[in-house]
Image 1 (cartoon, helix red, strand yellow):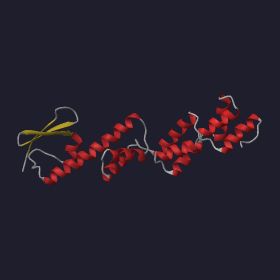
Image 2 (cartoon, one colour; image 1 turned 90 degrees about the vertical axis):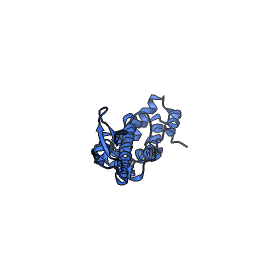
Image 3 (tube, helix red, strand yellow; image 1 turned 135 degrees about the vertical axis):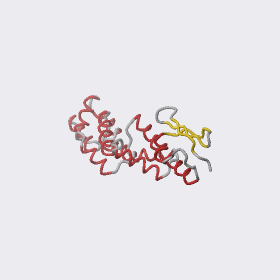
Image 4 (cartoon, rainbow, N blue to C red; image 1 turned 120 degrees about the vertical axis):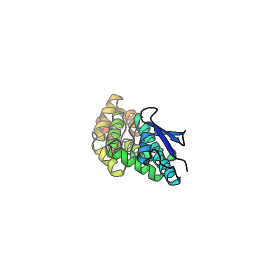
Length: 196
């Protein structure tokens, strides 16, 4: 059985593991600590399995952290990304629970911010709903996020005015996911009849 003869720190956060006097692997410090690796320990099969499990857990959490570095994600989106990367169900669940406890993944915050950003870019409620559901946000959180927005009809009138009003603006709004009530309000604001 190979024996751990040294644990050295070649750089911060990393540990070089020597087995029987020869360099074996350089691992993240957290993995070495969580696996309980110590000098003079024999590295048997159960020890190797534990080490590998901790390394996979660490890699999954690191991959999730990298994904969150660029933009916020819903838990469902992040889970899908980690699954595509080959992480097991248990590894994904553990990473998501850790990130949720740390406040880095929060579907309510994500849904509210995403809905506001899309509304500011001229999207209607239905388009926002479809976007959030596509990002695997729970229906109740989608509805809660939509309720924080300025009423759709009011947004539609303001956007139509910026686009010159009329049927052309109403068609543009319809393509952006605005509902018929909001569109009728735009047409009524122009003094015209309801949409055919």
